[in-house]
Every structure is written in structure tokens, then in C-alpha cells.
Image 1 (cartoon, rainbow, N blue to C red):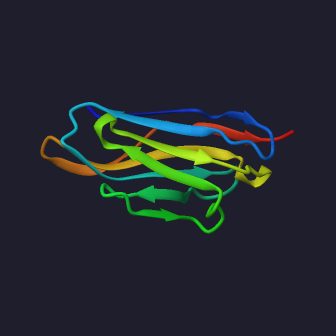
Image 2 (cartoon, rainbow, N blue to C red; image 1 turned 45 degrees about the vertical axis):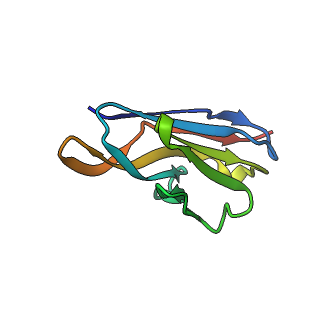
Length: 119
């Protein structure tokens, strides 16, 4: 069984720079896209950033220039470096991986980590 575990959230002051991490574990054959999504109260879940296996990145307009996504394929880990945080970045951040495990290819979600930006 594949599991994604996120870490690095918490209470952050405006302008802060936390880094989120997400580790995928289990009987994984390969991981294609790795990404971060977020869901703020009363809003739909939205894409924050995604990175392909070869390193091609895509960002939401709202985080371009402030957030950086990266991955370590040897560790099955994806990171989200968040800089210049704003109160509107407050949300639960979810890791998502599209991967192959056994004979199955599909999308797996982490449990989410809360990021609260407040002074």
C-alpha cells in the first residue's frame, strides 16, 4: 500500500519561509508527477505547483515567484519551499503523486498539512 506523509506546516508569520515535505512510501515502481494542492476554508482545492519526473514545473499564478517545488527521486520526496507568505496562503496543503505501484497507475493523496499565516 502506498502512503504519502506531509510535514512542515504550522503557524507562520506573514513574510515567513517554511518548507513542506512529502515522502511517498510503499511498493512504488515509479512516480510521475508530484504536486502540491491547497484548500482554504470555504474554497475548492486548487493546484499550487506540480513537477514532472524530469523536473518540468508548473505553478499557480498566485504563487509564481514566491514558491518553489522540487523533488528528490531517490527519496521519493517532493518539497515546496514557500517564501513571502501572505495571509491568503492559509490553507490545508495536500501532496499528490501520480505513480505506478504493482500493476496499478493512479493518483495518491496525502492527509494534508495545515499552514496558517498570521501575526
